[in-house]
Image (cartoon, rainbow, N blue to C red; front, side, top):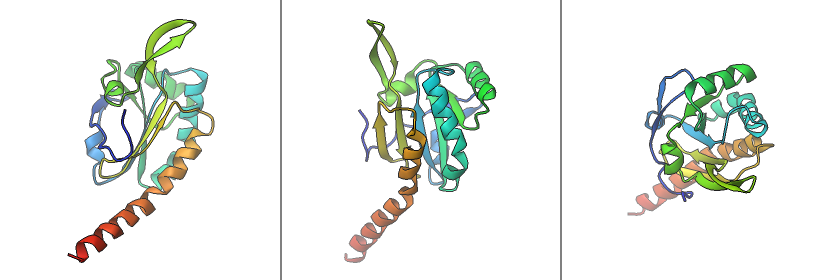
Length: 172
């Protein structure tokens, strides 16, 4: 499992408009919130996507992009986005390769049957590509607000770390 302090696995995935998104394109420019969710148009997934969309401007004010990832295809994402007025970028991981990279493709029990599926999880990644926070098995209600509070702390945490590094280097 990935943890805080790990480098985020890089990936490229198509979005709802079938345009490729490359996580490496954010390096040095923006933080990222990558949240993995099971399926479009389910109550929990819709609530989570709507909450993140409602707060997208707040995240952007802190140099942060929100990316939703699920195994649904691009057309399903586009329909989901349009039906619910979502503004965040939805990425299609139809072969579950990125879900596996982030260790969120897991066995789950559904109606007494073991099936593989996405463990609802969120990763907060700083501008350097470092995972700062990992949240596994999250509850959709209130999640966007909790994640926003963590993102607001990124610049102060990074600034503190940079000051410590500066002090350490200036004593040499």
